[in-house]
Image (cartoon, rainbow, N blue to C red; front, side, top):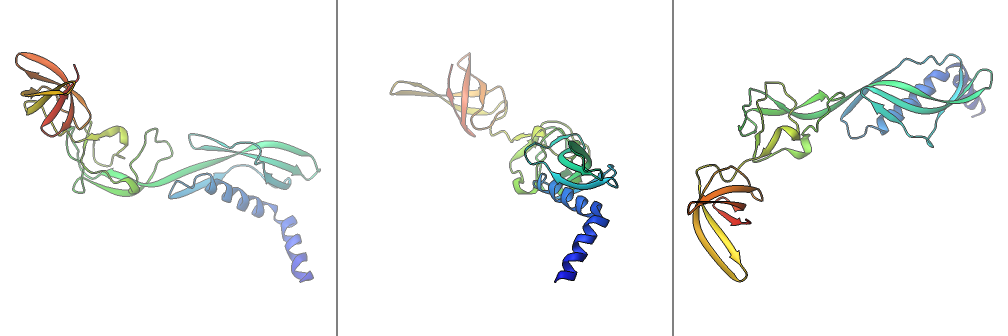
Amino acid sequence: MILLLLNIVFNLFINPGDKIHTEIGNYIHENHAEYDSVSYTLHDEFSSVKSLEINYKRKSNRIGNNFFIPVKIIDQNNISRERFLIAKVELFKKVLISNAVINKGDLINGSNSSFMLKNVTDLNQTPININEEPTGVISRLNLPPGTIICREHIQAEPVINPGDQVNLRYDFGSVSVTFIGTARQSGTVGDIVKIRANNHQYSAEIINHNEAIIIE
């Protein structure tokens, strides 16, 4: 037991960089637990470092692919100082990718998209991950093959489209009046759209695929 302990102590002083890299690696992965895979590189030189510990009293920060890690360092001259180590990180997530051209208004489904592990480090939008596979959504814009499909790219599939006949309801106290109108805009449940009836255009909230309530 004594010999084993001496070997451990000896290795820590001879190869402090190994312990440092392990500690930093654990910290990086813990701070990016929402990703499926993380790779990183460190460019700091540890040959003059006697000991290093993560400074949990300060917050880490990431700007682009630079991850700033707060640490406390004691060098070989026993001088203690605080600093940030910079790790170059690459963050990977299993996200929805377009397999073919998806045109604006196309339904997004398994025939034109699939989930793949992709580098999302520099992505400034919100990708759709495997835990939130979309159903009943269409593309807001044209997407070329290989595009990481983000929430900003999609919207709910309309239940009412321009030209559809709609049961238009007007509530006045306990009295309801219903008549037929023609949709001028597309929308899904809860959307406010323009509907024309009796030579007048109304704003109405969509209730379902053939009913809307006049709000003005």
